[in-house]
Amino acid sequence: MNRDILIVGGGIFGASIAYALARRGLGERVLLLERQQLAGAATSRAAALVTLVRDKPHFIPLVQETRRAIEAMRADFSEDVGLRQVGALYATSTAGAAELDRLAASCGEFGIVSEKLTPDEAIRHSPWLNPAAFDAAVLFPQEAYVEPYLLSTAYSRSAAHLGVRIRLAADVRQICCANDRISGVELRSGEILPADIVINAAGAWAGLLSAELGVPLPMAPVRSQYWITEPDAIFPRQGPIVLLPEIRAYARPEIGALLFGIRESRTAVADPRLLPADLSGFVFDPSDPDGWENLADGAEQLRRYFPAIDRLGIAHYITGPSNYTPDGNLVVGAVDRIAGLFVAAGCNGAGIAVSGGVGRLIAEQITGQACFVDAAPHRVERHGLFDPFAPEFLNLCAAARSRKTSG
Image (cartoon, rainbow, N blue to C red):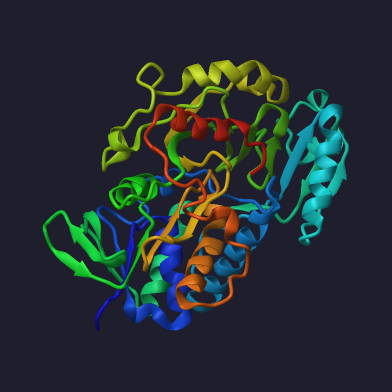
């Protein structure tokens, strides 16, 4: 059978789109192309919070769809993605209490449950927190995290069950079009794969493929990083995700240890043209390859909430590219100027959480269904023509990560 729908990229977005298309009966038409291994780049490096609570309310239905997709794959194909519904605890000072109340009220309109806690009540959930560091806390018990590799491969396996074909070692050199219409892709081997529809879900490299078509994507690969402590008895294995908005920090349990990240004020950003195909040896900032300088910059504020950091060792440091946009919205949908071209990128650190929603949104656009959410905020060409590799633009994308305070 002719595979006339090509998905470029086997990360979380490519896999979720394949699954969403297959659920709508198009599996036999879909070919998923990945140049290395499925979920082998940024996806596997994600902290993987599947948090419903969002500063941008229009992200919430996308996350809710991810949770529905996880349940559907469990029911239909017995897929276990390592979902841990442990809740999320937000802690803040008196100055931030009103904003936290506003966030809880806004999310409550989407059925997201919340419970106010005193500092003493909060540390019963997260005993590593210093109760003197904050005045107000809210627990969102529905929040969860997953194992990112398991979720991505669950999408892929489920899609394959429904007819999608997956091809590895398929390195796409360019997306081809003629007369403003998609005609297929060309692999670096020289092979041409004809297609009526191409979905560019190539992650940090998506902008390179689109730029060659004269379609700049409003995003840049920004360093996402987190640390994992040594195991310690103060970290409950079923403790909640913790978010500290005033210092732009987050944490979650990690097999008896604590995984934590700080959205630093000086975020490193890369020119996507310099990214290697294999990220294993890539360093965003050669002067600070292991993030110690960034950690030191935030250590004083973090120590107030997490005093045990001074005695605990750091067991692991994980870093990778996460595509951020200047306005914090995704880059998802049809390209107006080239018929048959779609993009799914610009995750803004929420790729795992919104994956199911992105898959559904792209599938609905391709099949001509009414979209379940307003796609306008994520429109691919919303910034018009610009230079996506200009230092000034790259810095705008980096600043977007520094401003992020929720999951």
